Length: 469
Image (cartoon, rainbow, N blue to C red; front, side, top):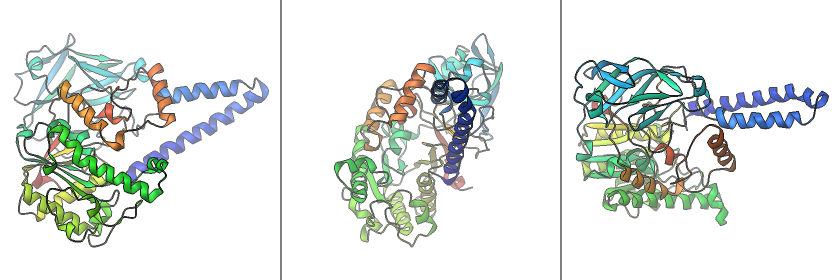
């Protein structure tokens, strides 16, 4: 987690503690002078209200406008919302990725229930109390849009009568040689299972073992270091085995074996060694036994930035990908995710092989832990962007119901997404189910089963010669 997000979380928790303290100070006289049972009753009601409506980690105002710009050549037109349908002002331009910029205004009930927009048979959700500019994803519905037959209706929110429609054309990148960079096991599946499962020449490179936060494995009688070692081995195995479910053989999967939360320091000081924070291991070769090719760091196993970059250069020159799939450096705050994209950019600069396109994904956000909002299987609207981002293109391929199910099963195989949530989270879900109408999928209890198994996958399209500008 980035230092910025840690600061936001600390501020959020501090504010909640202050509110709780203030509430107790106000209620104390009631217990003394009125009736003792009023205090626990009011606290219980307050807790229920908090869990139902105020427990989301939303670090911005729902009244803030999202700020997106697209490449200058992007086709756009003004459209109208008439009689519950989208009406064009000109013929629909070519482009399989369609984005609708619209103003949303929450109704009063939209403070209690999640505001959402129905686009034909698709649903896209937004923040409670939303009031501002948002970007709907109409990809996959070009026929209905072009014929003026796409129903569009707000639920617990109202839409402006005019909007702007963007059409962004892309080739089918799954038909090219692609390399998916996963900072941890499961990142490739979360972001791009639909993409890589239909790509005949996909390679998946996982950068770290994913060994930290292994306390759950101590129930097996292991100490902290042993638990971290076991978790690292299991997640390394996941990174090599699970892609086969999506049709990618082990011969095209590589585990580099570096250590979690050490990648930024490795890039900053490439000649220093950075062992695991929890297992104390300092030889990455322990999880490289099943890699399909020998890499530079196999010579000494040292966890340093110099070896990481040399490994990535060797992989680029061996597999010769045309497209790299990697985390979005401006949107995804996880330090390992950011460092992975910076490392691959540096490796491309050093390599004799130059991929053309970076497809960028965001598995985490700074400001909204629920995005993509709404239920499993729904569409993916654009995430909050409160500061201007680079004017990247967008590509948002659709996933069929069968591919969505396969993606959910791929996530279910990942050890880090198994197990039950904490009791407080299970209670929160029950309260939100009863009071706020939220639903969770039957495929798994981790929130990524809701967030990642969707009608769309979403990638920002950036040319590598513009990657670090």
